[in-house]
Length: 298
Image (cartoon, rainbow, N blue to C red; front, side, top):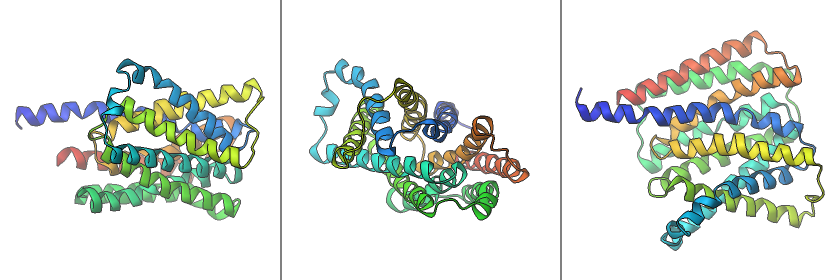
């Protein structure tokens, strides 16, 4: 193996590590949402407001030079990506409120199917035989993991539908991010995208006249935690990794979210995992491992 290939593989370790950290961070999202008593759109608005402010120092550092250097079409794409993210959060948070954590997380993570297919169509990303096998194994593990729960306790149909829509929107968001992150730094990308996700949700909050003022300090703490852990540590890690890895690899890593969410739901809400949850989790991990090996062998 050549020195260049060795250096390339070495450089890929950090993106994969970022995916691992982001995977665990995002698993806390549904749990934190469940603890909040606020309206879903209010939760999303505060969450993205705090996340946007966290990146403001990076923008001040270069006085917004990178933003001002972007073409109008690129800025428009970033704004639309932010709106997609805001819509995803709106539907996902609503689904967590209206159905089980299992149903919500499962249906929201199904976007991997759309990313794999659309990534090949629009970005020419190839799916090797090993990658296809790994994807199939991982999806099969998800079905084993939460299939029984969806059959026995389907929850609120509207909540399940919202989770499905959240998954579709997430797929579009990741595909758009993959294209933009090729030329735009993470701080600039995150600031603009998070800003427009905040603006889009806050606009709906104002239109619907939802209560977002005079909230208890405990709610503000929850919103801050959502911004720091699943958004900044989770989604930002993925946004960084997506600049180096194919979109479907990043999305497949999210298939592990139900494992983390399931374990946390067990810890905080006494949702005891069944044998199917444990077995399904192991199958998902196996699928992820196969996909990563397939990517490294290309």
